[in-house]
Image 1 (cartoon, rainbow, N blue to C red):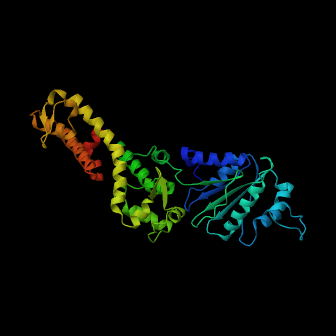
Image 2 (cartoon, one colour; image 1 turned 135 degrees about the vertical axis):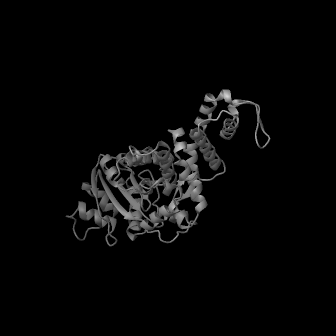
Image 3 (cartoon, rainbow, N blue to C red; image 1 turned 45 degrees about the vertical axis):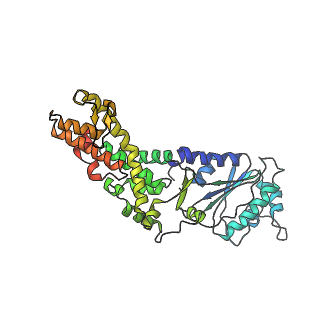
Length: 374
C-alpha cells in the first residue's frame, strides 16, 4: 500500500466518509474499479474503532451460513441459518465484518440481498449494537446495488482523485531527482495530466525520459499491454469502462484512460493532454520572462510599434516576446548571441503553445533557453 497516496485530500476524504459511517453503525458498500489503488480495506480496518473481522466469501455458502459458522459454531444442525438468526447471535453484536468480493461474482448478488435485508432489520438497534459490514466490491461487472437506508450506504471510487491530488503525488515522486528545473517541471506536469487518477500510470511515467513523455504513445501502449488491455475496450458503456479501470470523472465529465486512447490511436487526444500540461508550466514562465525583459531593456524598446499584422502597440508593457525579440535584434545594439538565441527559443516555445502544438523536447532542452528559465 502506498501510504502517501492515502493521505492526499481526495483519497483521505473518501476513506474518512467510510470510517464515519462505520463508526456510526452504518454498513457500507465500497465500489472500486479494477486496478484501483491497493490497501483501502486495511486502511479502513485500522481507522475503525470496532471489533474487526475479515471473512473469505465463497459462492457455495450463503452470507448467513458464513457468519454463523464463524460466530455461532455451536448452532444446532436443525437451526435456521438466516438473517433473523444472525441478528439474534450475541457474538455478532457490535462487531465489524469486512469482505472483498468481485462485482461479477455470484457471491456478490447473494451478499447484496443479504445486506439490504439485514440493514433494514437493524434500524431498531442502537448503532453500537449493530453488526456493521464493510463490503469492498471490485472489478468489472454490473453492480446489483442494495437499496440504501439509514443503516447502509454506498461509496463509489469515482471522481475522487482531483488534479491537485495527482500533482502532489507526482511532485513527491520527482522530489530530489536530478535535472534542470524546466525539464522536471514539464515532466511532472505531463505525468500528472496523463495519469489523471491512476497512480500506477503515474509510477510508470515518472521514470521515463522527457522525450518519452512528450511523445507518449509508445509508453502508454506499453502500460496498456502490461495491464492486459491488449484489445481496445468499447467506450460507449461508461459503467463497464469504469469498472475495468478505463475511465473516471473529472469536473463531472467522463474521461477515458490515456492508455486506452493510445490503444485506439487517438494521438490528437493524447497530444491535447500533453499540450495542456506544457501550458500549465510554460505560460507562467514565458510571462515572467516577458515582463523581466521589458523591465531590463525598456530603454531599448520603442512604442508605438506596428506588428506584422498591422496592430499598433502604444504601451511598452503590451509588447509580446516576438515584438521584443524583433526590436532587440534590429535596433543595432548587438546583444550577445547566446542571449538572442535564448530569446528566440522563448519565442519559439510561445509560438508552439499558441498554435496548440506540443513543444518538442529538443527545444525545451536547448541550453540557451534553459539559461533563461533557471
